[in-house]
Each structure stands twice: as C-alpha cells, then as structure tokens.
Length: 574
Image (tube, rainbow, N blue to C red; front, side, top):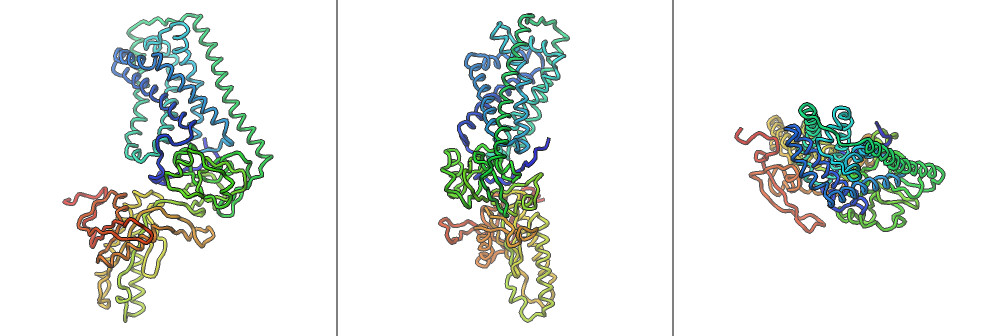
C-alpha cells in the first residue's frame, strides 16, 4: 500500500553526529522503546525455543523449562504484562495525537501490523495466560501443539511472522541511528530472516511428530472453552474500541483543521501553506506533501528533521529537554529546531537542512531536494593545472585551447567515471563533489579513485602534449571531506547551477594550493583517508593552519599515488 506524500531518506544522508544516544527522545518514547525491547526479549526466547523443535520435541520441551522459569515467574509475568500494556497503551496514545495518517512507508507498515497483532494475539494469550491463571491450565508444549495442529497452524504461523516483522522494523529503524549498525547490518538481516523460518519449521515439525507418536488429551473442558471464547470477544472489543477512538480523534482533528487554518508556514522556493496551530511542523509538512526527512519517525532521536527557522523563531518557545539534548549533540545554532518537536502557533519561515528524496509529490521544487538547499557531508576536490601560464607562453592560441580542452575533458571524464559531480570549471581548475548520492564513506573512496584516474590523465597528457610544449604537464589535487550546503545557486531552481558551499570547499581549495609547498600531486586530509578506510605509504605528513581554526588540519602530501591502497584493491604483490 502506498501512502500519499511519503518521503524516504537515503541511509547515507545521516552523518555520525546524527546518531542517537540511549535515552534519546521524550520520556513516553523512551518508555515505549524499553517496553518494546522487553517484549522482543520474550519473543526472541520463545521463537528460539520453537526452533529447537527441528531437533526433536523432547529438546524443545526441555528447553521450555528455562523459558517458563523466566517468563512465567511472578516477576517475569508481571514485567511482561506491564510492558505489553505500556507498549500498546503508548502506541494508541501516540496514534490518537497524530494530526495526519500521512507518514513514511516503514512507519505505516509498523503501525498497521502493530494494530493487527492484538486481533491475532488475544486468542493465544487467553488460552495460555488466561486459562492458566483462571483454571490452573498448564500451557505446556504438548498441550499447545496439540491444540494448534493442524487446524490453527496457518494462523499461528502468520501471527509469528507479523509479530517478528513488527519487531524487526522497530529494531532496524532504532539501531540504524547508531554508527556500529552499518557494520553488523548484513548479519542482522540474515538473523532476521533465519530465525522466523527456523521457528515456524521447528514448532510445526514438533507438532507433526507429536501427533504421529503420542495421543495427547487436551485438558480444557467445555466450560473453560466457553470462558475463553467470551474473554476473547471482550478483549478484542476493548482493544479495537480504543483503536477506533484513536483513529476517530485523528479524523476529528483533521476536520476541525479545515476550518481553522490561520497559520502560515513558508518554505524555500516561495512555497507557503496554511495550517492549524497544534500540529508539529513535521505533521504539517506531511499533510501538505512537503518532503521533510525523518529517519527515526518523529521520535526526537535522529535530528534528520532539523530545520533552520528563518523567521518567527522567537514565537516557538524553548526546546523540550529531549529536543535540546539532540540539538546540543549536533552542535546546532539557536535558530535550528526539530520539525517533529516544534508546534508553531504563529507564522514562521523555515529551511529544511537534511536532504530528502520526495516520492509522489507534485511541483518541480518538491521533486528536487537541491532546490531547497540541503546540508550534507561530501568530499570536495579541486584540480589545478600547474604553471599553466609558463606552459602556454609563446604558444599558438589553437595549441593552448586544444591542450586545455584535452585536460579538462579527460579530467572531468575521470571524475564522472567514479561517480563524482563536476561542479564548475575555474579557468584551468576543476571543482568536483563526491558522495552526494552515496554518502561520505563511499564518496571518499570515489574521490581517491578519481585521483588515480586523473594521475593517469596527467601522465598521458605529458606524453602526448607535443614538442612545442617544453615544460612537463603537472596537475595538483586538493581533497577534503566535511559538511557542505548543496543547492542550486543563481538558476532560480532550474536543473543546473548545483554547487557546494561551506568551509569544506575553502579547505579543499587550500589543500590544492598546499601541493606547491610540498611538491606533491595530491594533498588529502586525514578525514578523507579515514572515511575511505584507505592505506597510504610514502606520503609526507603535515599539518596546516586554517584561518579561524584552532586545531591544525592533518594532511597527506603524495607525489605519486602508487602508495595508495583502497578497500577492494588487489594485493600489492598481485
């Protein structure tokens, strides 16, 4: 199902400083997270126990002793019950506070599955915990497998899958805010697929073997079955009555907002919308199909929904503790706020700061994130032709233009071949950007590989330049990684004019100039080398002092790139 006005954020648009910390978000969000983790721990234990049925029913049954020892104890059952009520209650409360059902696809799927789980789970809980507490029924594996096999096998397997998918979505979109997660995500994906398959296989195999080898009498009387059916109907009525009330609250708020839209929100590109006070800026943007990044789903954890308030910041009030904590972590200025936490009461003008790819939106300015201007970590490269004046002195105009065009064409092709974007030509220099679509780590690798190609271009040009050019062809490259503002400048939002602005650009230009001091071909910052996980030998290390910076910048000056090793390169002795 496609949700109108949804937005998706590139995984790579999130920089390390955007990572969450334990305890991020408001206290209800933290409470919902921890209650969810308790429920996941129960599911994990239960599903692993199911998977042991692949070996044998006896192994599965013996292992259940430890599962029940933890979760069916007075303490375990109390913690589990409180966690379940808390998680469901907070989910319904949070749903009722929404001003719109427009949300990202993963939020929509997780919310839908979360609301559907009680319908499938209530009969199972009633049969196990309900009958156990009311009639001293013992929900052992032999009793439960006999009850479920074969008539309820499909429904039970679907329940297991839905609970697991809901859990995995929550874990994935929580853990991806942490830098370590990208390294373990392949293993996590294997685990996320393997465990439910093994769990379904295990319980069905155990139930099938049990039915073939033993005649188990189910110890549930007609009276108990009648009690269970009535309890199921009552519990479902209560839960889905609460769900209906939550959804009705959203509808009522939406209808009221149609008559009370007296708030004006201005976005870049001359876009202005009307809204009702009370909703968050993120909700207002989603209701009007305005793309705003939100990796954590509006839980004040990731900072990706941050916006710069151009006008009206004083009327927004002070940030909450959760918002202030996130803003402090990323070192945001006072005019930067989180769209998921800000509830405008007066007219404001805002500028989104994190790139987002819009889907299903209308309007050229909404489909092109760079029309807005976005903040993103990229690698910036400057390439310069050394001693161009001396090389071309007393040469024919045709020869000079031909040489310059050959250099610019081949160097630009080398940059594009590695995924770089040629920002502009500055006389005999080139400015290029890497990592706009791939993220800083890949962008840093691409930039270093492009430098290798440009070194080959330099050698080729020097060989083929012709006898009329006496001096050798030498190029210099400066390369740095850091946050930049990317936007379409001076083109009124047209398809061209994309450029990078910020300190990273000035630093990359400064590094290119530093080649003259070191007699090198490439001057690259340590930030690029670390991001690319590259190895460098035979380079001159140095520190350069940048204007306005207290800490010197560490750089590597390389006369040749023979000592450069990147991930995926063949071994040096190959």
